[in-house]
Length: 171
Image (cartoon, rainbow, N blue to C red; front, side, top):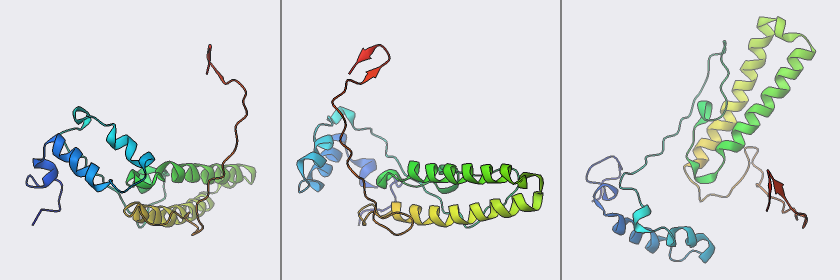
């Protein structure tokens, strides 16, 4: 039986040649649509690194609230397979922006007890949402839904035919 721990020196990823790794991946994705296979098929054997990358994630149950507020991977590091890490970092920072604006408007930042309560509420929501995203990132083939349980929908927006100017060039 093959060891399941990638760090085990007897695991197939540790013993296989780059060609064997490429062949195994190409066989595994053989039934996928061409546009999904393309990046793998175009990867040359020389582009396959000999070392294996082990992805780590973290599920935090709680955070102390003092002088540090965590956002993004610092609070809910996840595997990249669903592409949600940046999304949750953005949500974290947008929520904190609203919190800081509200605290400044109402002068709540002068009351340490109010600050602790507000940050505790942020931490609770962020950790609950982040924990679900971390768990979902371990199963990238599951239906993509938002942290609120609704399907993630990307609306296609047509771009105009205008020239796009970046720096000195036209693209």
